[in-house]
Image 1 (tube, rainbow, N blue to C red):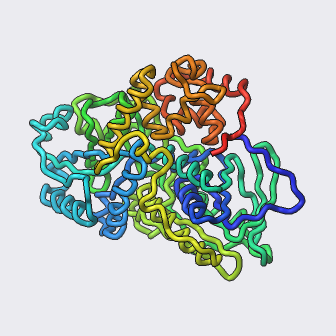
Image 2: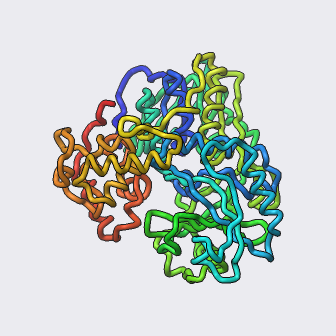
Image 3: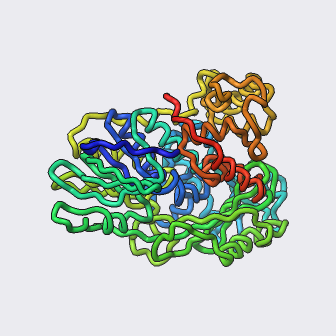
Length: 531
């Protein structure tokens, strides 16, 4: 979305400026806006343009973290797991994960003990617990080599990570927050009034604002932002009291290796594991690697060596051989891990710390974190910020839906979000019987109960037939959806639409992607529709 800055004599004032449009920044902005504060969220690129769209797409406690005695982190993650799955059943869902037993790796008793802890560290209300499986008869055994005869199955969840970020930003905006993408915070100077901030839009326009408190949620750039942009009143840079270990995680996507709905957790060596996950109907997602980097480049690339490593990992287990030339998509992101000086990147904690610096206008910096704990992190950050500026506001997100997640207008919700979504999808297919089934399912998954806002004609009427959605700019992507994404979800480029707001890019050719790019350049953007 292109946003024009207003020209005014006095800087606009906000309670909180959140810098960084990844999952933590968007989550914090959402939580604060829901407490009635005047919030701005700014992101120099697109929402979820970096780390938050480059995850393994899992909502999970982190089974392997138990080996590093991270019991508190695993428990916190497991406590969040079902709450998140309930909040957005359209972009998240339960996932059974199969762990084949490799006798030359961890012994079976160790795996069983770890899964027992995993089942009992936090209360489960509807996700089933772990169990042993006979891979000679279980559906997950068919794609595996014959020497894998025994395994274990346990519960976690999957998530559309980039859409999760976007929906947090949409919720923040719906609750009154100002969201600006392609807008960098180039300077933040502390004063008696608050933070005097300079924002720079991609077009070159600048704006000055004042914020009572500042949030540094820039992920891998947290230290750099403090050093280069944030200043005390005397001009000295803010000192970082913590540091990050930056680790690149890469993933590959290949044509599907199996047709059943379970994922796999594959032991690679004594420390590392690789996931193989059903993805976008026709593919398998494989990841991740752990490569330490000095600093984030902004355009991370999955290297050929990492591709070879991931292929080798899955080829140890699967009958069908995966070759580098089979890869249809590769992506990478830098994880900002809280530095604990562990020797191996695999052993570095995935927990987070919130650092609040007062003695003037408050500054909160987010160090570390993972997608599964974003809601709890955001709640704790909002609690600390409200206390620091003396603002009222109670926590509210624990039982709240994300946009599109409340399906009660369509169905009578039950006890299981996955069943609720299946019932919702059937209702959508009945209501929009003219939609092709694959398109109906994709739109229901992406937008949930907000699907009506997408299926609109240019005049704002509800679409009655496929032709009402305008031209199919690329296969499975119609003008009405593109218009919605640009108007309501800050999508500006073909990449925003094809790879972050959706994964239609996986199903299109380079020529078709170029067609969308050209179409975006030729079609003016309407104003954001009032909510």
